[in-house]
Length: 386
Image 1 (cartoon, rainbow, N blue to C red):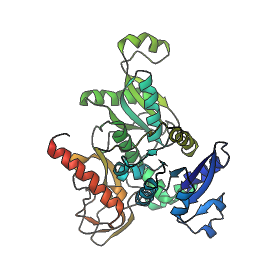
Image 2: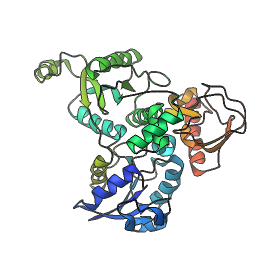
Image 3: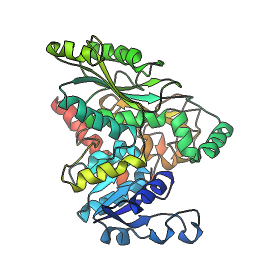
């Protein structure tokens, strides 16, 4: 029996620990929370809660990080990997902000469940069948780049999510983070800053439109389709060898040249256990942000920002949102995952990309990790290898 512990005590963690409690192959050990344990009568397995990371580490064979906080995860994972324990994350925010800093320091992988992990799984299947992916796609139901607080409070309560999570879904920050992780982890590019995100109710129609763009650019792309009619899943648009046209036609895949492999659902915490089993079975990393990422999530002002304004947390805020950008063209930008307890230093116009000259953030391990990641990018630019 493997001893599994979890970091986080929100929606994802709650569902996961209940599954682990019933799993015949694993033992649920500890659950790390930053909340007051005595006040957590809402949590189903309160006896497993701890506020002590060291307590978590010494009782674990593998740890699942699903706090959704890039800075907190950075500090925790640094200590866990130094203890030689593998980490499975459902924390694309951590991965796309500083995950690359840890890519060579131990096993840390994103899990199946959220769209990036499911796309990585679907990619493995596609390649094993001889497909040549051109588009790694996310299905997004709704987008409002600047939602108001009243609406977000309503939907947060209705869906039992935090208001920050609900806002990051709505303003597009979450899909940008997810697809940036896919781009870095699977070695693709993006078609443009912020991606294309065409509106289309059919992956078999919208997907090939994106594939045509990938062919024009000369490389695979990570992107998404926007449609309230599509279920929240993922898809890959791929080519195959001409000698397989007849077979693919027989299996109702169409006449090509583009073939759509779609998975119209993702089940978040239900699927994490598959990645736990993968890692403990010696199959290694499913998806990480790579040691040399090319895509980051820039911070965009939702409104005019004034000196002295404070931003408690960038992701899911009403001050800023995030978009996927090419790192080489945006040296000096501040990734939105680093915007935490931050203070605006000079006026920033609505729609502008924030740089480190615009905002003051705390001196954290995550900040040091990002400067290390960007520094390596700058060196690659100087050497002409990118």
